[in-house]
Length: 261
Image (tube, rainbow, N blue to C red; front, side):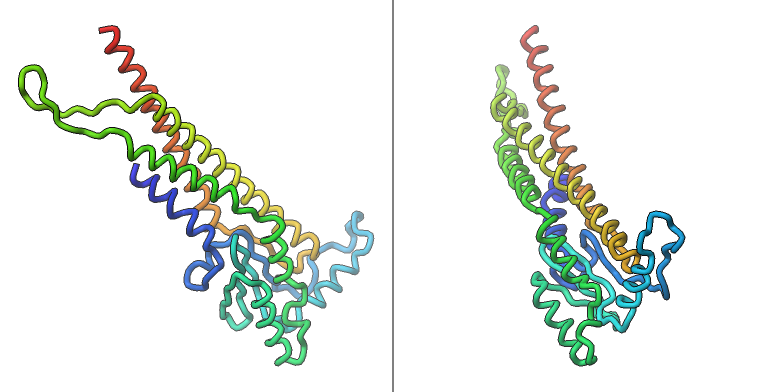
């Protein structure tokens, strides 16, 4: 049980702290947007669905200048920028990052070229309007309460039997305590599952729509590390809930057997 407990407690903390620091946490992000290295649009001008095919080349002409930033990564509580020189900047304030980028653009005598398609603004809108971390906090709180109740379960202790010899016994917990603990773990699992599924779908949709709305001028990627951490925590929550269910069913069967004897 130690491994699931450690994963449940540490994984959400790492997930929520993603993109708040460039010291390793910049690799834990939900979605990244980066300017695509291409000389022209990959859209076919003969596509019958395109009413105005020339707009794609215009966007490419705007986006492929001397951009100060190369990539923007969005997490639950922060953003990370990768500059054209390879340096990384991370902060919980998008305004602070935008001010730094604008300063670089002013030094290059072209403030607009620093972030021509406003990737910082797009990532900030994704973080504020789409991302929601409340369900993760609820899942962590429910799981923490479950662990507290598990700590109250009676452990092994020595008793003297009728013959005067010592033996180790472990009493069964009360049915009410076991049912409450199972309910908390099941609720924590459900909230965690909904949260991570929501995170995965929204991140994938945001990356795909960003690529489509810019006609392929930028590339969108879902954060692999964040998805692995999130789904690993959900699996551990499921293991805890399943283990409690098996324990309760086993105790019920043993109780019936002892009553029959």
